[in-house]
Image 1 (cartoon, helix red, strand yellow):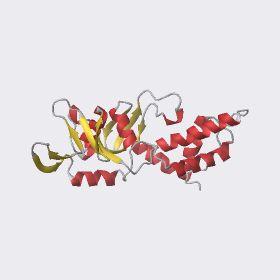
Image 2 (tube, helix red, strand yellow):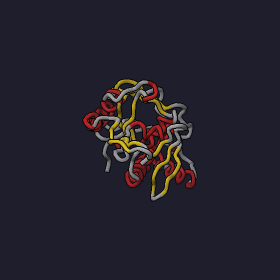
Image 3 (tube, helix red, strand yellow):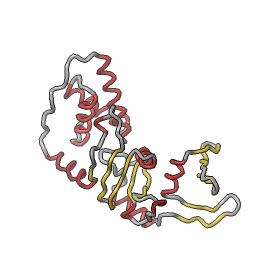
Length: 226
């Protein structure tokens, strides 16, 4: 339940019996797929911004998960307008896609961009952090092409990666493992899954740097290594 001021557009959310102010990004996210019930002065019949049949279609078309390549999140998934409502975007299925809450926030913060007509979308990161090279998509990834490549990768034999650097301290290795698990969790993996894939990657590359460990862990997840 979110209340939005008609004059200043400030939003407040009901949470655990309290009314908490939220920022403009959260207001925009709520506006993407809202059920409107009127105001505190005058109730109104509930109306949906997006027709239920369109919502069902988009959820099934996108397989119930975030559209960002590499993200497997299927919980806390939101509908997002490719062309924002304030820029003239409508509620048509080709202008709607599924995003997890984290990537949805990144889109409204301007850290992520989605263009195209769903489901054929181009997704780019804006100024990706240098500390997370494995998470940067540069310059762009086509969602449908990424899906085809992912399926093809499952049928190909694994190619050994480059020899990992040696001589790293135990502390540096522990830091790399911890950061790799956090990176996979931010992509939508459950903590247990992230830990399992990183441990499998560590067994393959031993004492790696962070980028190599993340890439290997993602490869393990795509190949369904157990």
